[in-house]
Length: 155
Image (cartoon, rainbow, N blue to C red; front, side, top):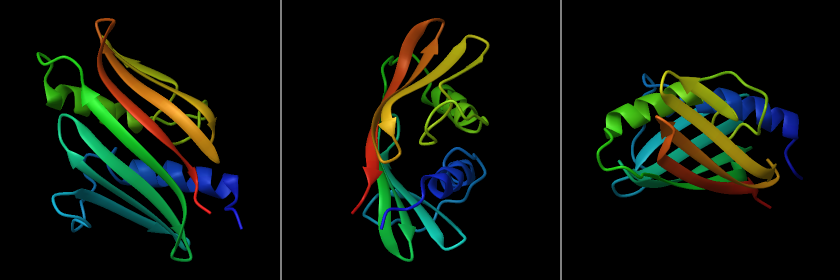
C-alpha cells in the first residue's frame, strides 16, 4: 500500500525543518562509517537523513511507516566556485530550506527564495511518487552551488 500524499507532504515539511535545515537540530549517532545523520519521528512516521562529505556531499533520506521504508530520495551537492566560502553557501542554503512554501514538492526548499545578492532556486519534474530535481544557489547572478536529487515511493 502506498502512503497518502497529503500525509507525506505534511510530514516532509516538518521533518525537513526539524533536521538539516535547522541549524540547531541535533545530529544522531552515525548509521554508517563517517556519515552525518539526522532523525525525526512523528505520528508513527520516521524520517532519517544520512550524508557524507562537507563542501561536496552525497546522501539519502528515507521515510518509514510502521518501520517499513516507504519513500526515499538520494542527493549529490557541490560548491562550484572555490573562492566562495562553504559556510556562507550552506548558511544561506539552510535559510532557504527553512522557508514556508507550497509552490513545489517538499523535498528541498521553495521554487525561489532570495536574500540580498543570494538567490536559491529549486526545480523538479514529477511528484513525490517519482521525481528528479535540481537545486541551485546563485551569488551575484552566478551559480555557485548545485544539488541533484531524485526519489519516490519504495515498494
